[in-house]
Image 1 (tube, rainbow, N blue to C red):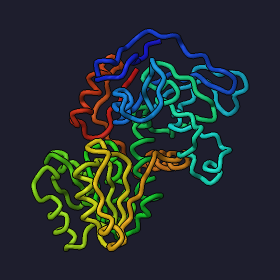
Image 2 (cartoon, helix red, strand yellow):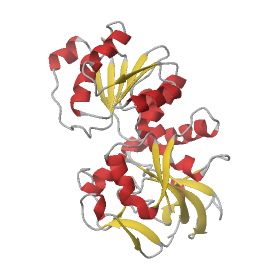
Image 3 (cartoon, rainbow, N blue to C red):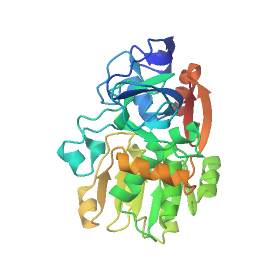
Length: 342
């Protein structure tokens, strides 16, 4: 089969489309023909060697593989040839205390395609049948591959971790990004007032079309003051943050009294200053968020299947253009999801 692999850490140039052996489904596993695979910022970090995640080389990236079952290993119940499936971004052990309490996204022994297992930048992927999620009728493979990380992460941050309530004001940073696009839709569907930030007027206009009530360009001086003006000096109740660096610091200062800032990334700066006096006197909370649970992925996939939410796909590219796709994401040229199509 054809697969995109890298044999050393580095820039996009280390990605190569190669001929590799077809994976063989073992007991309890299936073989899936990959029809579409989502590309994520984490892929760039893993490729560059900055993710702080253990990766064995050579490695095949790709957290979100969607396709159809073409072969079954011994002892596979519940699936048949031709079934349309997503390979779950997390295959939890189901036995540890985190799994038993509904936090399988944090399972220390989880199977994670594209991280500790070969991912979806390939024509074929083998996966345990228990890690498969049926794709709802009416969704394309490309739409399905755009759901798990974008909408799953946004749901986990806004609803599960952030505790978003109807009528609250949410500040969604980098609303043109993959998870930002999802967060604008989810927050609006949950009954919130949405203030979206982005670095270009074009992205802000598109965020408004997705439902953002107000937009602010964070590349302009005084963008934080503008957010305060839009909230009559009070600040947002919840900040959806995944940029880091100066954007994190500014957003923390904008929080309303008793507000929450939920963070899942920090590409603009992973180590930031923090004023503890401001934190406790305003009784604000900083909440970390890591991935989504399987149940949350199934829930948002159902919402997309019913038309409540809609993936926004920036473009669909062949495997051979993986280097160009990584450069596109590095330059933040995309609005919404980028898909590789083997």
